[in-house]
Amino acid sequence: MRKVLIADDDFISLEVLKAMLANFEVSILTAMTGEEALNLAGEAPDLIFLDYEMPDMSGAEVCQELRQSDMHKNTPVIAITSHQSASEMSACREAGMNATLHKPVSPEALSELMTEYL
Image 1: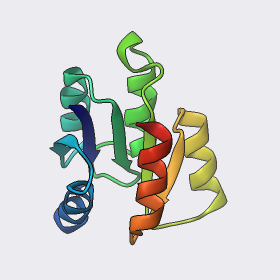
Image 2: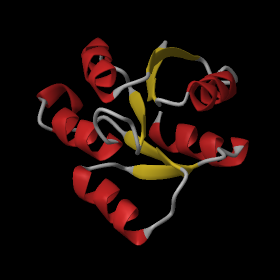
Image 3: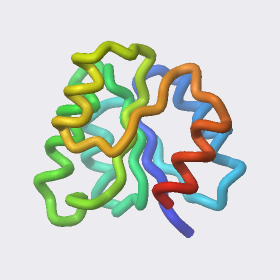
């Protein structure tokens, strides 16, 4: 079974995305901080969703760290964000993120990303 890691400091957002992913045959790992996400990344998830704004590290910072390891050079990383500013989108791309998913998450957008990256 494929593994998906979700990191979001907002418990409700985390649970909503987790519930939406229940429609897919995946094992779900969850983290509420960037540090937790980096630790759980050691379990080799096939796809990673990172909230852009977490208290300890931004999703972009977590992604930059992940991209430095051989294990995650090519792992798809999706930013979860409630903003659509050009500077934030640029930071996501520069960090090596593959795509962005905007809050509130639509089932169609999630399904599209799951099909594309898993």
